[in-house]
Image (tube, rainbow, N blue to C red; front, side, top):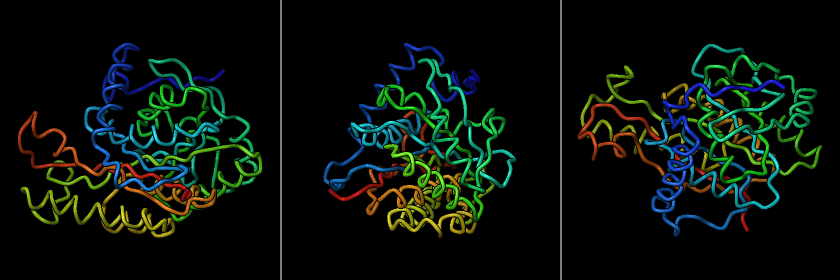
Length: 297
């Protein structure tokens, strides 16, 4: 059996099982404090958008979304569309066989869903190599292991191309043909602002960082909340407000195909807001949003 080994354990999250569980529990507790209950409409979760920075920065935001999805008792598989930070093929790259390993053990791949999607979707190819050095999916896996231990996963790397939505719809159609209860996650961070990222259209300082969050991030967030999957890739290209535009587009398209009719912003913060108490004011920031997609109850 082919097993994908962890590559950012000990960097983005702990490398030992005990430390990993302890930090996961901290993230889950912080998620409960971050999300205002009044903003969450009653939804049957189908998908979500989660960030993928180190857990100390964005783990609580991701935990809130995954915990809501994991509350589905029928959940069998979590499809994770990942941001591509390195060169890849235009097609969405599926890790179709075997398992993914984390410090908490192995999670099996939903091989039958992978085969069904690959057989019908021209925008999907089987390519485990595309996953080897990427972190955007890996950092979500331990949350699934703890919060939805019964679930299998299907990791898919999606570049921000015009075919991203087609990839998401192809996977949702495959799940429907199999009658598989599936949830869809899109893994992305938002605006990377500041000199470190060579992106300073509003200059530097507190007002610039506020613009990155309140204006630039919100452009993309509002598209997701409106479930407008087909406009997402163009938006991220034009305004550099997500590193995973393809992953977001695929997740929204898949969720809508599976019946999502409403979206809810659970949390929106930045690395500057999370870390400034520890390190003081910063000149750079990365945005993180946790968004839930689903059917209205």
